[in-house]
Image (cartoon, rainbow over all chains, first blue to last red; front, side, top):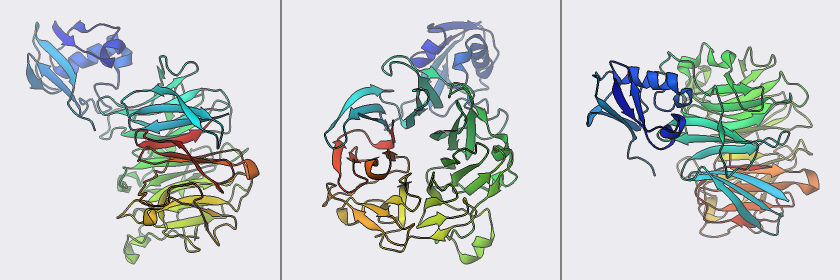
Amino acid sequence: MAVVRVRGPLRNLAGGLAEHQLEGATVVALLRELERGHPGVGGWILDERGRIRRHINVFVNGERGGEATAVRPGDRVEVLPAITGG
Amino acid sequence: MTELVVGTKKGLFLLEGEPGSGFAVKTRAFAGQPVDFATRDRRSGRLLATVTSPFYGPKIFYTDGDPDAEWEQAQGVTLPEGGEQTLERIWVIACGEVEGTLYAGGDPGVLFESRDGGASWEINAGLWQQPSRPDWQPGGGGLCLHSICTWPGEPDKLAVAVSAAGMWLTEDGGRSWRRGNEGLNPGYLPEEALRDENAGRCVHHVERAPRQPGRMFMQFHGGVYRSDDAGESWTDIGGGGLPSDFGFPLMVDPADPDSAYVIPLVADMDRVTPDGRVRIYETRDAGSSWTARGNGLPAEHAYLTVLRQAFSRAGEGGQLELYFGATSGDLFGSADAGSTWSTVATRLPPVYSVVTA
């Protein structure tokens, strides 16, 4: 299992938990698994196309990743809002 | 007591007060987030807000209770999965004619319907599946469905406007739609392009006269128009005394089908109030003539921009109240149908929408 870490409103939507142990071979598979366990997260990280929203960054073991980035058991996946605004 | 529901770039504000004697901010919700539109359904008392987080995408939230407490996220506000488009923004929410029915319009040119007061929504398939949709052109604000005009007592009749895919009309509750753009004359297109019905018709705002529902008024991207056949065709009424035919919002007095109010801006290349003066223009003869109404509004060095959802009304006739907000964060109101104005609030974040509740 990999560890997916969320914060802010995503944490509230994910049952109040910051860390989630999830099964999945790619980033998008992990995020879908997170949505299955916590339907309130649906639409917040992944859009209708199944892509990570433009202003959300995902890091796998500290390196920027995308939907198809491979994930191995024990990997640490951080979901973070990008630095944006106005 | 009048309540103003104000959507801004940095949150939702609820203000309360008496017209002409001051308003106070009672609530700020969604701090720091863009609230594109917010309204209170007068039938149920429910507050609804459309919020487009730059991180998490557009959502509709609602509350039946304390607006300072938790809001519920509405369900179903999404495009069908598997396509190449994403929902960008919800621009407007309007009450339907049937109890509990609401409509929401958004980008990309999408209409949602709720039958439970806004808790859950379904996309209108008839409009979503329009064969011409791939050719629809967005305006500067995106492909926004911003105006939803119901027909009093006729729930199946609906008119919606999309920038820049023009007017769309239905008489069967949204199962089928047809265009309503005859007579619109986009000055930004070459004449030959007008034959292409998919060429951009950049409608900015549309209102229906509730006592004479076949009468509609439109602020166009360069042009003010009137329709006397429920939006099938349009007549230019922008010539009779307006300083400019460019602007965004438009409002009507429900008591008078010949009435309309617009807030002209200089032009599309200079979207501020003309001559540094803030003035509303009123017609009471269906657009034959327009009269400036600026008593009490800033009269010099005032270069304001008023967006399409930032103009609202309460009451009618002699009791008509009018309110509008600007991207400067200023909010103005009139308790006498626009004859005199006062400042309702200053230094709010840029105002996106104003609704009286």
